[in-house]
Length: 340
Image (cartoon, rainbow, N blue to C red; front, side, top):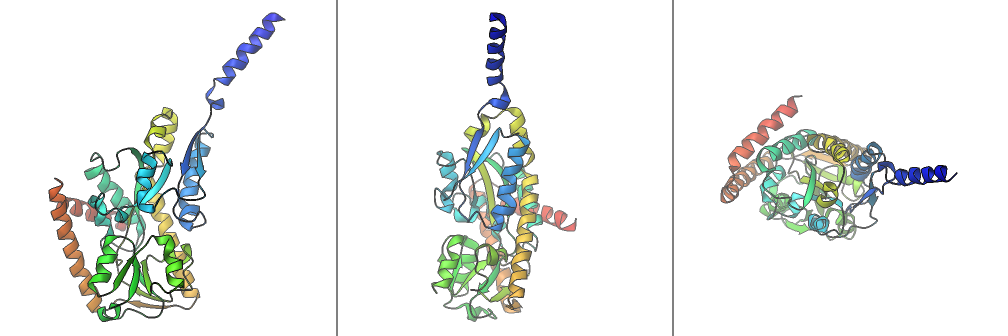
Protein backbone atom coordinates (compact mmCIF):
# COMPACT_ATOMS: atom_id res chain seq x y z
CA UNK A 1 0.00 0.00 0.00
CA UNK A 2 2.81 2.40 0.92
CA UNK A 3 4.53 1.56 -2.39
CA UNK A 4 1.35 2.27 -4.34
CA UNK A 5 0.81 5.58 -2.54
CA UNK A 6 4.39 6.62 -3.14
CA UNK A 7 4.08 5.71 -6.82
CA UNK A 8 0.90 7.71 -7.09
CA UNK A 9 2.62 10.70 -5.47
CA UNK A 10 5.46 10.54 -7.97
CA UNK A 11 2.98 10.29 -10.84
CA UNK A 12 1.07 13.33 -9.60
CA UNK A 13 4.28 15.29 -9.19
CA UNK A 14 5.44 14.34 -12.69
CA UNK A 15 2.07 15.29 -14.17
CA UNK A 16 2.32 18.70 -12.55
CA UNK A 17 5.59 19.27 -14.37
CA UNK A 18 4.42 18.31 -17.86
CA UNK A 19 4.17 21.08 -20.49
CA UNK A 20 0.42 20.60 -20.85
CA UNK A 21 -0.12 21.63 -17.25
CA UNK A 22 2.30 24.53 -17.16
CA UNK A 23 0.81 27.99 -16.87
CA UNK A 24 0.14 29.61 -20.22
CA UNK A 25 2.12 32.62 -21.39
CA UNK A 26 -0.36 35.45 -21.75
CA UNK A 27 0.14 38.40 -24.08
CA UNK A 28 -2.08 41.39 -23.33
CA UNK A 29 -3.00 43.09 -26.62
CA UNK A 30 -3.55 46.85 -26.49
CA UNK A 31 -5.73 47.86 -29.42
CA UNK A 32 -6.33 51.56 -30.16
CA UNK A 33 -9.17 50.88 -32.59
CA UNK A 34 -12.47 49.28 -31.48
CA UNK A 35 -12.40 45.50 -31.15
CA UNK A 36 -15.52 45.55 -33.32
CA UNK A 37 -13.59 47.16 -36.20
CA UNK A 38 -13.16 44.82 -39.19
CA UNK A 39 -9.39 45.06 -38.87
CA UNK A 40 -9.69 43.51 -35.43
CA UNK A 41 -12.38 40.95 -36.21
CA UNK A 42 -10.78 39.82 -39.49
CA UNK A 43 -7.07 40.15 -38.77
CA UNK A 44 -5.96 40.44 -35.16
CA UNK A 45 -8.51 38.27 -33.40
CA UNK A 46 -8.22 35.34 -35.88
CA UNK A 47 -4.43 35.66 -35.78
CA UNK A 48 -4.45 35.43 -31.97
CA UNK A 49 -6.91 32.55 -31.97
CA UNK A 50 -4.82 30.61 -34.47
CA UNK A 51 -1.75 30.87 -32.25
CA UNK A 52 -3.73 29.86 -29.18
CA UNK A 53 -5.12 26.83 -30.99
CA UNK A 54 -1.84 25.70 -32.53
CA UNK A 55 0.01 25.99 -29.20
CA UNK A 56 -2.75 24.07 -27.43
CA UNK A 57 -3.34 27.05 -25.18
CA UNK A 58 0.27 27.43 -24.05
CA UNK A 59 0.19 30.90 -25.60
CA UNK A 60 -2.84 33.04 -24.89
CA UNK A 61 -3.88 36.58 -25.71
CA UNK A 62 -5.86 38.94 -23.52
CA UNK A 63 -7.77 41.68 -25.33
CA UNK A 64 -7.49 44.82 -23.23
CA UNK A 65 -10.77 46.78 -23.14
CA UNK A 66 -8.98 50.11 -23.60
CA UNK A 67 -5.64 51.10 -25.16
CA UNK A 68 -2.86 51.70 -22.67
CA UNK A 69 -1.35 54.62 -24.58
CA UNK A 70 -1.72 56.99 -27.52
CA UNK A 71 -1.53 55.17 -30.88
CA UNK A 72 1.97 56.49 -31.58
CA UNK A 73 3.22 55.37 -28.15
CA UNK A 74 2.36 51.69 -28.34
CA UNK A 75 5.82 50.41 -29.19
CA UNK A 76 7.19 52.07 -26.06
CA UNK A 77 4.22 50.71 -24.08
CA UNK A 78 5.15 47.15 -25.07
CA UNK A 79 8.84 47.79 -24.48
CA UNK A 80 8.10 48.89 -20.92
CA UNK A 81 5.61 46.12 -20.15
CA UNK A 82 2.41 48.16 -20.07
CA UNK A 83 1.11 45.72 -22.69
CA UNK A 84 2.54 42.71 -24.52
CA UNK A 85 1.21 43.10 -28.06
CA UNK A 86 0.05 45.94 -30.30
CA UNK A 87 0.31 47.50 -33.72
CA UNK A 88 1.47 50.92 -34.84
CA UNK A 89 1.53 53.25 -37.84
CA UNK A 90 4.89 54.45 -39.13
CA UNK A 91 3.43 57.79 -40.15
CA UNK A 92 2.46 58.48 -36.53
CA UNK A 93 6.20 58.51 -35.68
CA UNK A 94 7.63 60.26 -38.76
CA UNK A 95 10.99 61.07 -37.19
CA UNK A 96 11.75 57.84 -35.38
CA UNK A 97 10.51 55.62 -38.20
CA UNK A 98 11.14 57.81 -41.25
CA UNK A 99 12.96 54.96 -43.00
CA UNK A 100 9.56 53.37 -43.68
CA UNK A 101 7.64 56.38 -44.96
CA UNK A 102 8.10 55.35 -48.61
CA UNK A 103 4.98 53.21 -48.12
CA UNK A 104 2.97 56.38 -47.45
CA UNK A 105 3.70 57.92 -50.85
CA UNK A 106 0.97 58.47 -53.46
CA UNK A 107 0.06 56.11 -56.28
CA UNK A 108 1.42 52.81 -54.97
CA UNK A 109 -1.46 50.86 -56.48
CA UNK A 110 -4.95 49.58 -55.83
CA UNK A 111 -4.17 46.51 -53.70
CA UNK A 112 -3.01 46.32 -50.10
CA UNK A 113 -1.85 42.75 -50.75
CA UNK A 114 0.77 43.93 -53.22
CA UNK A 115 2.02 46.85 -51.15
CA UNK A 116 2.07 44.82 -47.93
CA UNK A 117 4.09 41.92 -49.37
CA UNK A 118 6.49 44.28 -51.16
CA UNK A 119 6.87 46.25 -47.92
CA UNK A 120 7.73 43.14 -45.91
CA UNK A 121 10.31 42.03 -48.47
CA UNK A 122 11.88 45.49 -48.52
CA UNK A 123 12.09 45.55 -44.74
CA UNK A 124 13.80 42.18 -44.66
CA UNK A 125 16.34 43.16 -47.31
CA UNK A 126 17.29 46.63 -46.08
CA UNK A 127 16.14 47.23 -42.52
CA UNK A 128 15.88 43.98 -40.57
CA UNK A 129 19.13 44.54 -38.69
CA UNK A 130 18.86 48.31 -38.23
CA UNK A 131 17.44 48.10 -34.70
CA UNK A 132 14.37 50.25 -35.39
CA UNK A 133 12.22 47.91 -33.31
CA UNK A 134 14.67 47.23 -30.53
CA UNK A 135 12.96 45.92 -27.41
CA UNK A 136 10.00 44.33 -29.17
CA UNK A 137 9.58 41.26 -31.36
CA UNK A 138 8.29 42.24 -34.79
CA UNK A 139 5.50 40.13 -36.27
CA UNK A 140 5.17 41.81 -39.63
CA UNK A 141 4.56 44.79 -41.87
CA UNK A 142 1.59 45.77 -43.98
CA UNK A 143 -0.11 48.76 -45.57
CA UNK A 144 -3.70 49.76 -46.01
CA UNK A 145 -5.31 50.29 -49.40
CA UNK A 146 -5.35 53.45 -51.55
CA UNK A 147 -6.26 56.66 -49.75
CA UNK A 148 -9.29 58.67 -50.89
CA UNK A 149 -10.54 62.18 -50.08
CA UNK A 150 -13.90 61.77 -48.33
CA UNK A 151 -15.92 64.96 -47.88
CA UNK A 152 -19.16 65.85 -46.15
CA UNK A 153 -20.51 68.19 -48.84
CA UNK A 154 -18.55 68.21 -52.10
CA UNK A 155 -16.23 66.55 -54.59
CA UNK A 156 -12.77 68.12 -54.72
CA UNK A 157 -12.79 68.97 -58.43
CA UNK A 158 -9.78 71.27 -58.37
CA UNK A 159 -6.95 72.30 -56.09
CA UNK A 160 -8.88 75.51 -55.38
CA UNK A 161 -11.71 73.41 -53.94
CA UNK A 162 -9.40 72.34 -51.11
CA UNK A 163 -8.60 75.88 -50.00
CA UNK A 164 -9.73 76.45 -46.41
CA UNK A 165 -11.17 72.95 -46.02
CA UNK A 166 -10.50 71.33 -42.66
CA UNK A 167 -9.39 67.76 -43.29
CA UNK A 168 -8.49 65.11 -40.73
CA UNK A 169 -5.17 63.57 -41.73
CA UNK A 170 -3.01 60.91 -40.11
CA UNK A 171 0.57 60.66 -41.32
CA UNK A 172 2.83 63.31 -42.86
CA UNK A 173 2.04 62.57 -46.52
CA UNK A 174 -1.70 63.33 -46.61
CA UNK A 175 -1.02 66.25 -44.29
CA UNK A 176 1.53 67.66 -46.76
CA UNK A 177 -0.84 67.22 -49.71
CA UNK A 178 -3.76 68.90 -47.97
CA UNK A 179 -1.59 71.82 -46.87
CA UNK A 180 0.00 72.17 -50.30
CA UNK A 181 -3.49 72.60 -51.77
CA UNK A 182 -4.42 75.26 -49.22
CA UNK A 183 -6.41 73.05 -46.88
CA UNK A 184 -6.15 72.91 -43.10
CA UNK A 185 -4.77 69.61 -41.80
CA UNK A 186 -6.31 68.46 -38.52
CA UNK A 187 -4.01 65.82 -37.06
CA UNK A 188 -5.98 63.41 -34.92
CA UNK A 189 -5.95 59.60 -34.44
CA UNK A 190 -8.23 57.66 -36.76
CA UNK A 191 -10.77 56.64 -34.04
CA UNK A 192 -11.54 60.35 -33.48
CA UNK A 193 -12.95 60.72 -37.00
CA UNK A 194 -16.62 60.18 -36.14
CA UNK A 195 -16.49 62.80 -33.40
CA UNK A 196 -14.63 65.29 -35.61
CA UNK A 197 -17.07 64.90 -38.50
CA UNK A 198 -20.29 64.72 -36.51
CA UNK A 199 -19.48 67.92 -34.61
CA UNK A 200 -18.32 69.80 -37.70
CA UNK A 201 -14.74 70.20 -36.53
CA UNK A 202 -13.59 68.87 -39.92
CA UNK A 203 -15.13 68.96 -43.39
CA UNK A 204 -13.60 65.73 -44.55
CA UNK A 205 -11.05 63.00 -43.99
CA UNK A 206 -8.36 61.16 -45.91
CA UNK A 207 -8.80 57.41 -45.55
CA UNK A 208 -9.07 54.22 -47.58
CA UNK A 209 -12.67 53.14 -48.13
CA UNK A 210 -12.57 50.69 -45.20
CA UNK A 211 -12.86 53.56 -42.72
CA UNK A 212 -16.42 54.33 -43.82
CA UNK A 213 -17.57 51.15 -42.11
CA UNK A 214 -14.74 50.69 -39.61
CA UNK A 215 -15.24 54.09 -37.98
CA UNK A 216 -18.98 54.38 -38.73
CA UNK A 217 -18.65 57.52 -40.86
CA UNK A 218 -20.44 56.28 -43.98
CA UNK A 219 -23.37 58.63 -43.31
CA UNK A 220 -21.13 61.60 -42.57
CA UNK A 221 -19.03 61.75 -45.76
CA UNK A 222 -21.03 61.29 -48.96
CA UNK A 223 -18.59 62.65 -51.55
CA UNK A 224 -15.47 60.74 -52.57
CA UNK A 225 -12.59 62.01 -54.73
CA UNK A 226 -10.47 59.09 -55.91
CA UNK A 227 -6.83 59.34 -56.97
CA UNK A 228 -5.86 56.37 -59.19
CA UNK A 229 -3.24 54.40 -57.27
CA UNK A 230 -4.15 56.20 -54.07
CA UNK A 231 -3.68 59.69 -52.62
CA UNK A 232 -1.42 57.99 -50.10
CA UNK A 233 -1.08 54.77 -48.13
CA UNK A 234 0.02 54.00 -44.57
CA UNK A 235 2.57 51.50 -43.32
CA UNK A 236 1.73 49.41 -40.24
CA UNK A 237 3.84 47.23 -37.96
CA UNK A 238 2.60 44.59 -35.53
CA UNK A 239 4.73 43.45 -32.61
CA UNK A 240 4.78 41.56 -29.31
CA UNK A 241 6.86 41.57 -26.15
CA UNK A 242 10.40 40.41 -26.91
CA UNK A 243 10.89 39.31 -23.32
CA UNK A 244 7.87 37.02 -23.39
CA UNK A 245 8.61 35.76 -26.89
CA UNK A 246 12.20 34.89 -25.94
CA UNK A 247 10.96 32.88 -22.95
CA UNK A 248 8.73 30.63 -25.08
CA UNK A 249 9.65 27.10 -26.08
CA UNK A 250 11.17 26.57 -29.51
CA UNK A 251 7.95 24.91 -30.68
CA UNK A 252 5.79 27.85 -29.62
CA UNK A 253 8.21 30.34 -31.17
CA UNK A 254 7.99 28.39 -34.41
CA UNK A 255 4.21 28.61 -34.30
CA UNK A 256 4.34 32.39 -33.97
CA UNK A 257 7.07 32.66 -36.60
CA UNK A 258 4.94 30.70 -39.08
CA UNK A 259 2.30 33.46 -38.87
CA UNK A 260 4.86 36.27 -39.10
CA UNK A 261 6.82 37.99 -41.84
CA UNK A 262 5.48 37.66 -45.37
CA UNK A 263 2.71 35.32 -44.20
CA UNK A 264 1.41 38.09 -41.94
CA UNK A 265 1.82 40.74 -44.66
CA UNK A 266 -0.21 38.65 -47.09
CA UNK A 267 -2.89 37.97 -44.48
CA UNK A 268 -3.15 41.63 -43.49
CA UNK A 269 -3.22 42.81 -47.09
CA UNK A 270 -6.13 40.50 -47.90
CA UNK A 271 -8.07 41.83 -44.90
CA UNK A 272 -7.49 45.45 -45.91
CA UNK A 273 -8.60 44.78 -49.49
CA UNK A 274 -11.78 43.10 -48.24
CA UNK A 275 -12.44 45.95 -45.82
CA UNK A 276 -11.99 48.47 -48.64
CA UNK A 277 -14.41 46.55 -50.83
CA UNK A 278 -16.99 46.53 -48.03
CA UNK A 279 -16.56 50.26 -47.41
CA UNK A 280 -16.98 51.09 -51.08
CA UNK A 281 -20.04 48.84 -51.30
CA UNK A 282 -21.60 50.58 -48.30
CA UNK A 283 -21.03 53.98 -49.88
CA UNK A 284 -22.58 52.87 -53.18
CA UNK A 285 -25.56 51.38 -51.39
CA UNK A 286 -26.09 54.69 -49.60
CA UNK A 287 -26.15 56.56 -52.92
CA UNK A 288 -22.94 58.51 -52.48
CA UNK A 289 -21.20 60.58 -55.16
CA UNK A 290 -17.87 59.45 -56.64
CA UNK A 291 -15.39 61.13 -58.97
CA UNK A 292 -11.89 60.55 -60.29
CA UNK A 293 -9.39 63.31 -59.62
CA UNK A 294 -8.96 65.93 -62.32
CA UNK A 295 -5.87 66.23 -64.51
CA UNK A 296 -4.83 69.27 -62.48
CA UNK A 297 -4.98 67.31 -59.22
CA UNK A 298 -3.17 64.32 -60.71
CA UNK A 299 -0.36 66.53 -62.02
CA UNK A 300 0.08 67.99 -58.55
CA UNK A 301 0.04 64.53 -56.95
CA UNK A 302 2.83 63.40 -59.27
CA UNK A 303 4.90 66.49 -58.46
CA UNK A 304 4.45 65.97 -54.73
CA UNK A 305 5.38 62.29 -55.07
CA UNK A 306 8.62 63.20 -56.89
CA UNK A 307 9.52 65.67 -54.13
CA UNK A 308 8.75 63.11 -51.43
CA UNK A 309 10.96 60.51 -53.08
CA UNK A 310 13.82 62.99 -53.47
CA UNK A 311 13.51 64.00 -49.81
CA UNK A 312 13.45 60.34 -48.78
CA UNK A 313 16.69 59.65 -50.65
CA UNK A 314 18.32 62.67 -48.98
CA UNK A 315 17.10 61.66 -45.51
CA UNK A 316 18.27 58.08 -45.91
CA UNK A 317 21.71 59.25 -47.07
CA UNK A 318 22.10 60.94 -43.68
CA UNK A 319 21.28 57.58 -42.06
CA UNK A 320 23.76 55.66 -44.22
CA UNK A 321 21.04 54.00 -46.31
CA UNK A 322 20.76 54.03 -50.09
CA UNK A 323 17.25 55.39 -50.36
CA UNK A 324 17.19 55.20 -54.15
CA UNK A 325 17.97 51.48 -53.97
CA UNK A 326 15.23 51.00 -51.38
CA UNK A 327 12.66 52.66 -53.65
CA UNK A 328 13.85 50.73 -56.70
CA UNK A 329 13.63 47.40 -54.89
CA UNK A 330 10.24 48.17 -53.33
CA UNK A 331 8.67 49.12 -56.64
CA UNK A 332 10.25 46.09 -58.29
CA UNK A 333 8.71 43.75 -55.72
CA UNK A 334 5.45 45.66 -55.96
CA UNK A 335 5.36 44.98 -59.68
CA UNK A 336 6.10 41.29 -59.18
CA UNK A 337 3.23 40.83 -56.72
CA UNK A 338 0.80 42.87 -58.81
CA UNK A 339 1.41 40.58 -61.80
CA UNK A 340 0.43 37.45 -59.86
